[in-house]
Image: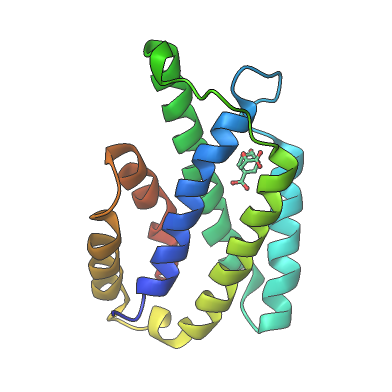
Length: 157
Ligand SMILES: C=C(O[C@@H]1C=C(C(=O)O)C=C[C@H]1O)C(=O)O
Protein backbone atom coordinates (compact mmCIF):
# COMPACT_ATOMS: atom_id res chain seq x y z
CA UNK A 1 0.00 0.00 0.00
CA UNK A 2 1.35 3.42 -0.98
CA UNK A 3 2.02 6.18 1.54
CA UNK A 4 -0.97 8.29 0.45
CA UNK A 5 -3.41 5.39 -0.09
CA UNK A 6 -5.09 5.71 3.35
CA UNK A 7 -5.54 9.47 2.95
CA UNK A 8 -6.92 9.22 -0.59
CA UNK A 9 -9.04 6.25 0.54
CA UNK A 10 -10.68 8.38 3.24
CA UNK A 11 -11.27 11.17 0.70
CA UNK A 12 -12.94 8.54 -1.53
CA UNK A 13 -15.12 7.40 1.39
CA UNK A 14 -16.24 10.99 1.92
CA UNK A 15 -17.06 11.30 -1.79
CA UNK A 16 -19.09 8.06 -1.66
CA UNK A 17 -20.89 9.14 1.55
CA UNK A 18 -22.00 12.22 -0.38
CA UNK A 19 -24.48 9.95 -2.19
CA UNK A 20 -26.34 9.76 1.13
CA UNK A 21 -26.22 13.55 1.45
CA UNK A 22 -27.65 13.86 -2.08
CA UNK A 23 -30.46 11.44 -1.17
CA UNK A 24 -31.16 13.28 2.11
CA UNK A 25 -31.65 16.57 0.22
CA UNK A 26 -33.44 15.16 -2.85
CA UNK A 27 -37.03 16.38 -3.02
CA UNK A 28 -36.57 18.74 -0.03
CA UNK A 29 -35.95 22.48 0.37
CA UNK A 30 -32.41 21.81 1.65
CA UNK A 31 -29.98 23.24 -0.91
CA UNK A 32 -26.91 21.30 -2.01
CA UNK A 33 -24.76 24.22 -0.91
CA UNK A 34 -25.08 25.18 2.77
CA UNK A 35 -22.52 27.95 3.49
CA UNK A 36 -23.25 27.96 7.23
CA UNK A 37 -22.49 24.25 7.58
CA UNK A 38 -19.40 24.67 5.38
CA UNK A 39 -18.09 27.37 7.71
CA UNK A 40 -18.74 25.10 10.71
CA UNK A 41 -16.80 22.29 9.03
CA UNK A 42 -13.90 24.58 8.14
CA UNK A 43 -13.76 26.18 11.62
CA UNK A 44 -13.69 22.73 13.20
CA UNK A 45 -10.94 21.64 10.81
CA UNK A 46 -8.80 24.69 11.59
CA UNK A 47 -9.12 24.15 15.36
CA UNK A 48 -8.37 20.42 15.14
CA UNK A 49 -5.44 21.09 12.77
CA UNK A 50 -3.79 23.28 15.41
CA UNK A 51 -4.21 20.49 18.00
CA UNK A 52 -2.57 18.03 15.61
CA UNK A 53 0.32 20.37 14.80
CA UNK A 54 -0.84 20.92 11.22
CA UNK A 55 -0.88 24.25 9.43
CA UNK A 56 -4.55 25.29 9.76
CA UNK A 57 -4.51 27.12 6.42
CA UNK A 58 -3.20 24.05 4.63
CA UNK A 59 -5.80 21.82 6.33
CA UNK A 60 -8.54 24.30 5.45
CA UNK A 61 -7.44 24.29 1.81
CA UNK A 62 -7.66 20.49 1.72
CA UNK A 63 -11.16 20.56 3.19
CA UNK A 64 -12.41 23.25 0.81
CA UNK A 65 -11.62 20.68 -1.88
CA UNK A 66 -13.41 17.90 0.06
CA UNK A 67 -16.48 20.14 0.22
CA UNK A 68 -16.35 21.02 -3.50
CA UNK A 69 -16.02 17.31 -4.28
CA UNK A 70 -19.11 16.53 -2.18
CA UNK A 71 -21.15 19.18 -3.99
CA UNK A 72 -19.94 17.80 -7.33
CA UNK A 73 -21.34 14.37 -6.40
CA UNK A 74 -24.60 15.85 -5.13
CA UNK A 75 -25.10 17.95 -8.29
CA UNK A 76 -24.20 15.00 -10.48
CA UNK A 77 -26.67 12.70 -8.75
CA UNK A 78 -29.48 15.25 -8.68
CA UNK A 79 -28.98 15.79 -12.43
CA UNK A 80 -28.99 12.02 -12.98
CA UNK A 81 -32.16 11.58 -10.92
CA UNK A 82 -33.87 14.41 -12.79
CA UNK A 83 -32.99 12.84 -16.14
CA UNK A 84 -33.73 9.27 -15.00
CA UNK A 85 -36.60 9.29 -12.50
CA UNK A 86 -36.43 5.49 -12.23
CA UNK A 87 -33.03 5.89 -10.51
CA UNK A 88 -34.33 8.27 -7.84
CA UNK A 89 -33.79 7.15 -4.23
CA UNK A 90 -36.83 5.57 -2.65
CA UNK A 91 -35.78 6.39 0.92
CA UNK A 92 -34.61 9.69 2.39
CA UNK A 93 -31.75 9.35 4.90
CA UNK A 94 -31.56 11.87 7.74
CA UNK A 95 -28.94 14.56 7.08
CA UNK A 96 -28.51 14.87 10.86
CA UNK A 97 -27.26 11.31 10.96
CA UNK A 98 -24.95 11.64 7.94
CA UNK A 99 -23.11 14.78 9.08
CA UNK A 100 -21.54 13.03 12.12
CA UNK A 101 -20.27 10.39 9.67
CA UNK A 102 -18.75 13.16 7.55
CA UNK A 103 -17.14 14.54 10.72
CA UNK A 104 -15.72 11.09 11.54
CA UNK A 105 -14.16 10.86 8.07
CA UNK A 106 -12.91 14.42 8.47
CA UNK A 107 -11.07 13.40 11.64
CA UNK A 108 -9.53 10.43 9.78
CA UNK A 109 -8.43 12.73 6.96
CA UNK A 110 -6.84 15.17 9.42
CA UNK A 111 -4.92 12.42 11.24
CA UNK A 112 -3.71 11.09 7.88
CA UNK A 113 -2.66 14.59 6.82
CA UNK A 114 -0.61 14.75 10.04
CA UNK A 115 0.89 11.30 9.43
CA UNK A 116 1.94 12.28 5.90
CA UNK A 117 3.04 15.84 6.65
CA UNK A 118 6.73 15.34 5.80
CA UNK A 119 6.11 13.24 2.73
CA UNK A 120 3.58 15.75 1.42
CA UNK A 121 6.15 18.51 1.74
CA UNK A 122 8.69 16.65 -0.39
CA UNK A 123 9.24 16.15 -4.13
CA UNK A 124 7.81 12.61 -4.14
CA UNK A 125 4.32 13.77 -3.15
CA UNK A 126 2.89 14.08 -6.65
CA UNK A 127 4.03 10.58 -7.61
CA UNK A 128 2.54 9.08 -4.46
CA UNK A 129 -0.66 11.02 -5.04
CA UNK A 130 -1.11 9.89 -8.65
CA UNK A 131 -0.46 6.31 -7.58
CA UNK A 132 -2.96 6.50 -4.68
CA UNK A 133 -5.54 8.11 -6.97
CA UNK A 134 -5.11 5.34 -9.55
CA UNK A 135 -5.48 2.56 -6.94
CA UNK A 136 -8.51 4.14 -5.33
CA UNK A 137 -10.33 5.34 -8.45
CA UNK A 138 -10.41 1.81 -9.88
CA UNK A 139 -13.35 1.00 -7.61
CA UNK A 140 -15.36 4.15 -8.45
CA UNK A 141 -17.74 5.08 -11.27
CA UNK A 142 -17.02 8.09 -13.50
CA UNK A 143 -18.89 10.61 -11.31
CA UNK A 144 -17.06 9.57 -8.17
CA UNK A 145 -13.73 9.44 -10.01
CA UNK A 146 -14.30 13.04 -11.09
CA UNK A 147 -15.16 13.99 -7.52
CA UNK A 148 -12.07 12.24 -6.13
CA UNK A 149 -10.02 14.17 -8.69
CA UNK A 150 -11.60 17.36 -7.38
CA UNK A 151 -10.85 16.35 -3.77
CA UNK A 152 -7.15 15.58 -4.08
CA UNK A 153 -5.06 18.35 -5.76
CA UNK A 154 -4.51 20.23 -2.48
CA UNK A 155 -2.96 17.18 -0.77
CA UNK A 156 0.54 17.95 -2.07
CA UNK A 157 1.82 21.21 -0.63
C1 LIG B 1 -22.22 17.61 2.60
C2 LIG B 1 -23.09 18.64 2.60
O1 LIG B 1 -23.30 19.45 1.47
C3 LIG B 1 -22.42 20.54 1.19
C4 LIG B 1 -21.04 20.09 1.42
C5 LIG B 1 -20.51 20.16 2.69
C6 LIG B 1 -19.37 19.29 3.07
O2 LIG B 1 -18.80 18.65 2.18
O3 LIG B 1 -19.03 19.21 4.28
C7 LIG B 1 -21.08 21.04 3.64
C8 LIG B 1 -22.18 21.79 3.34
C9 LIG B 1 -22.82 21.77 1.99
O4 LIG B 1 -22.44 22.94 1.31
C10 LIG B 1 -23.92 18.94 3.77
O5 LIG B 1 -24.84 19.75 3.62
O6 LIG B 1 -23.66 18.37 4.85
